[in-house]
Amino acid sequence: MKWTQVIDPLNNILLSVLIAAMPIIFIFWALIIRKMKGYLASLIAILIASLIAIIIYGMPIKLALLSIGHGALYGLFPICWLVIMSVFLFNLTVKSGQFEIIKHFMASITSDRRLQALLIAFSFGSFLEGTAGFGAPVAITAAMLVGLGFNPLYASGICLIANTAPVAFGSIGIPITVASQVSGIPELPISQMVGRTLPILSVILPFYLVSIIAGFRKAREIWPAVLVSGISFALLQWFSSNYLGPSLPDVIAGLGSIICLMVFLRFWKPRTVWRFSNEPAPTFNPDITYTGGQMLRAWSPFIVLTIMVIAWGMKPIKEVLNTIGLFQFEVPGLHNAILDKEGVLIPKLFKVNYLSAAGTAILIANLIVIPLIGLTYREGARIFIATLNQLKFPILTIAAVLGFAYIVNDSGITLTLAAVLANTGFLFPFFAPVLGWLGVFITGSDTSANALFSKLQYATAQSIGVDPVITVAANVSGGVVGKMISPQSIAVAAAAGNLVGQESQLFRFTVKHSFIMLLVICFITLIQAYAVKGIVPVYEMLNSTKTIATPDISGGYMYLLGLAFLLITLTSTISLKANKKTHTPDLAN
Image 1 (cartoon, rainbow, N blue to C red):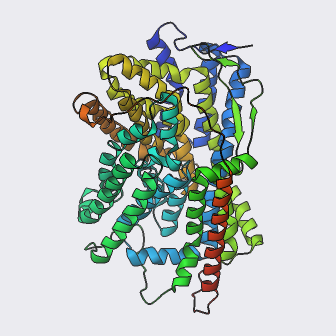
Image 2: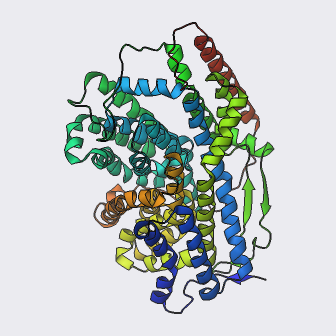
Image 3: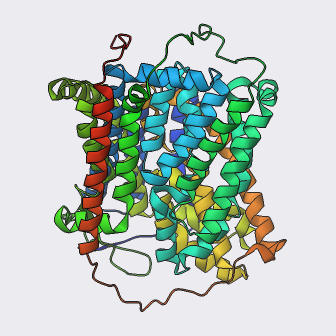
């Protein structure tokens, strides 16, 4: 039995949109007004969406249930797999006592919370987004800031907001790759167009973040450092996205801004050190010193993590891992059971890339660093079990959120909302980023939002005489500011920041900033469409008949051998330096 999606089930688009918007309006109401726990809000949203899908859209009950199950399964793997491994890595660092050394190092650079937020939430988080993506940057940076003594709400909230600048180029550029595949526009012009929009946000974002933490006046006190952080990031993001493509902007801009800010802080310090009002004064003791070996050992979890996620993002390695460690299956009863509005069957496959998944890269990093940081594997196992216990409610929340995302997509609810925005005519470029924002809010992924709406963005722009690369890029750019309020992202940040059950506070913290930034991107897109057309890159469409080459995996094995050699050399160096007899304070407690 086949079922066909409908966009206007009530034969009145306004009424259909009002009904379609109910589950999303409920999530806003539940989290902002009722302050409901994340998993409870998500489960009720699933119920509302299911009733609308079945009663209004005519979706068979069996398909609705299977769609929810498919989404929940995707929430467990790869999303929860990655979150568990990220938090496990941080917990290992804390329990071994090595995080105390990292805290000392950060304090030696600056004890100022404003500058620590720029270094970790903005710059280091951007670097992690470029390598791992899919929730890892927020999970790791929020946990680091909480470990440094940040208020958990501010730590999680600013990491979500900081994550806007790099999301478009996350995971070695996957969101733009998907937008290219769906729209038929080559990757480079999309990358260039996004790279002519987001750097404007990137310049503003550091000052914006510090203002959220400490207020406008306190942000002005460190304006030189804010400018160094924002301008260095924006320039590197613009250059790499325009001339190197979508794969490296986050890695280059993140690393570059870290280096620029750290060098600048060697020569400039704020007049006063700012900290949260309810925390004790800085306790940095300059008499305590650590050797290079001790510092290397303390940072080894994040060094190994960085090497692993970069390696896992390389195409030759990914192809090898997928050749030997991937299987996929058709979702029983759901695969090819739904036809879209054009009568095309929608395939429903579940891919288990258990070797090439980013979570697996972090798992291997964890196994490597356990002995490096002075733990036994027995102790590591105990920490892993404690991590699972710590994350039991976030896991439920993430599974529920993805179940909700899949039911609203498969039923056609999302397409109803998109259809209204696509009918705004001359003003469509203004609303084009809203589609990306909506897609990321629902799915939690800029990649998924681009898969959903890039073709619609392309076709609508053509129909009103606007260059389609503007609206396709707007889908990517608009999506980045939806990430901070996506229930999936909120659940990840709450787990990392020890805010389980307080997801509504986090949502309320970020939601107004999401709308403000979305409005900025909407106006930028409108100006690009009609006022500064010279900003649009010249390009040719992809050849739709291109052949798919069989990957040559021999190069991938060479990359893996090189990775193994690098890791053996690194771990041997760290072990030798760590075993030198030096006086080390007892930090395990």
